[in-house]
Length: 258
Image (cartoon, rainbow, N blue to C red; front, side, top):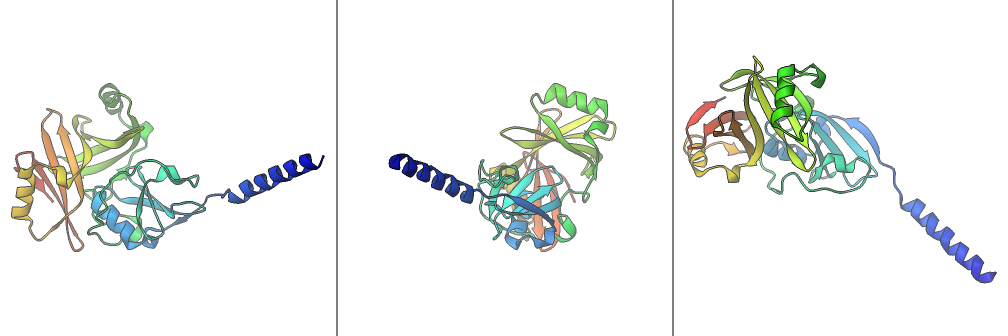
């Protein structure tokens, strides 16, 4: 009987310890202005095509902040502003998943005032379109040509030199989102994905160096695969609070800038 009592006591102590070690994640909506400068600088340099929709502060989690971008992506940061990875991995207080970008050089960028990124889309923050309100031609094209991808977000925007466009963010588990772009007539133009500036062709880098030497280059730009299969590149530049969008062909020829 004495042995049984000791055994039961050990079990009760163990259960009590487990209970104490469990934490509940709580969330509080906050503003972009509350983010550490290190976090906003990271977003400026690595997500220059996006704007901040809203920010949530966490307790009981390895992440202190979850930032949701207008692209429907979620980014997790520590209290000091260090990037942790996909924010979806931290809603329940655990750490997991791979980081979106291994680059830890947090360059450039200003503070994100008013809840939106200062550079963001070429034409400023876009206007959201409910996914179920997208034209049938667009949803049919995505279904037929981007197998396995789900539509996460869509908005009206402007794109140099195309003018008014519809941008549709699509995602698939385990892959970075892609952006499918259609013109005002719902005709497919291109799809884009983020790319490290270090990986763009040398001809593109040479053009940037020769023509924008005073600007700071964002860590990541975009690789554009056009409807005809040719490649173009978008490079985002910063000079103080000034943001510039430069689009070039793979051979370094300028398409447009804004």
